[in-house]
Length: 113
Image (cartoon, rainbow, N blue to C red):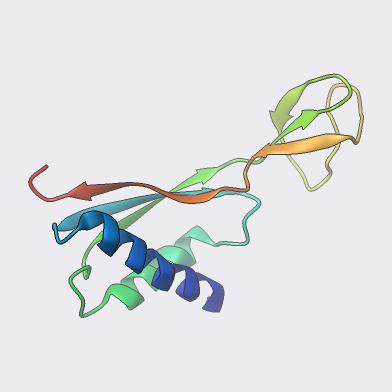
């Protein structure tokens, strides 16, 4: 939970900067499955760090991004179904993580927009 609190504190600065004084209704974020972030805990921490600020009551919507790999040997791309970085087509282990490691604020929904 300490990790998520720290992330939320950083997010506040980013949201304030991009909102530029406008009222924010919702913050949308994308969190990759391989990130060590628990979405429910992130939402809870967001409510804690925004309490008694101009962002109190702003909803945090988290979109979870599944982990996806690409095999260097055969080029196959697929979802990572377990913590074994192995191609499901050729069983090769020279794979790259191409999705699932992201964490980003994708958009802000502003009042009156």
